[in-house]
Image (cartoon, rainbow, N blue to C red; front, side, top):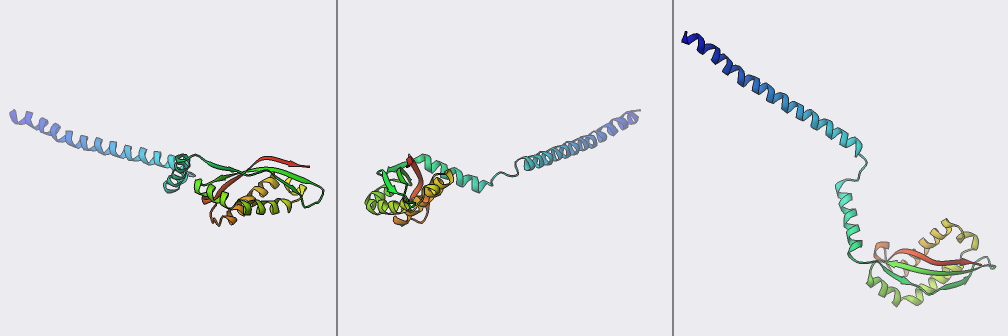
Length: 170
């Protein structure tokens, strides 16, 4: 009888490892399926986000801007006759600059900067610069003009932005 009792225990012991292996395989398969589903959902929901390199670049630029405060140079007021011959423009312009070195360079070249801007402003008609789009275009031309005088190739290294503090057309 001892042999008969030992046989069912041996069968139970042999069945236990097989069922544990099956359970382990089922758990691993379930985890893999859930991981794939989660990854697919994340891909579709976040698919249009910039890649890590672009995001790191953007963060580096943002931290660089935060590293030092913005540098502004306010120019003297410009009063010019406009190209149509009947209107005047009075404008106060400030330049946002890349750094203090560029500010020093602007101050060194101020006669050239003022001359270039006087010529540019007086070449415009009241119709051209009275709209928002006209002012935006003029700001871009002022930026380009000053950067050209300073011999700067990239706006990020020279005049970054042109701001109109006052803009009166009569």
